[in-house]
Length: 347
Image 1 (spheres, one colour):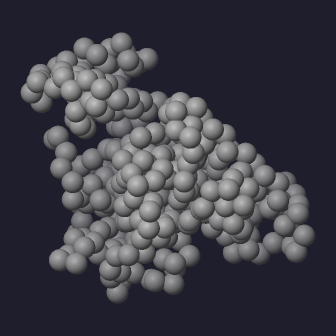
Image 2 (tube, rainbow, N blue to C red):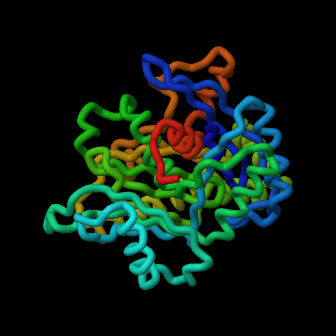
């Protein structure tokens, strides 16, 4: 399956294969999204998004017809609930529907539900921890329709923060050796949304979306240098800005970025009872902004690493490696979705 990250700024796709020596990156593609086609992670113009996905399909491979995409934002709810350990999968499904009615603030007929049994509850072995995920059906259906218009059959709709956490394993070689037993915050900063996920000894324990992204930096360039938005975006990506931009736009953006991540860490520590975050794995387009890795290490006192989910896997000759080096951190969600090709699901 192609993993397709449908973002407000661009759509990104990853196609992975599994060889005898591990994963192989067969293809990647990115295609800009028309402005306004997606607002606050909700698709506003299915046709425009479908056209973008059709271009992605041509770049990736028209022989691959299955895709995985993801939902995120305010309308996605994930919760760990505790169910009787003796229930069969079928009994669990009907019991969860009853439970979900009191847990989800939307009418159940407007919601798509899924669940996954995790492990036996440590404090009460008669109970099982079950992950419940719910999303507005219209959000799910909009993605399915856009993918269909682009020529794909949708096999899986995931949750973005879980896709990011799944791609975490691919980044382990970049982190210090003891990271496998530590608390690692994965901060994926897109154009308008930041996904903040935490893993403890490799296990996903927390996630939260917040409205903040690299577009804020672009808007500062627009207002400071009186450039059109697209031109400002190009100047940002190519580092083609006046010499004094460091003080005028970069430093203020750095300040906001540190505030946002500090606040997210604080909220996690408060709600989880954990005492600290050991490492930060930074991904998304904003990970490429000048000086961000050092800034977070210095300001937060937390060793920060820029993500590259393809760092330790075989890269196909069809992939432009020099381009990949510059953009790899942007593909965390898409890589996590592509990994769904190799894991089971209920359907």
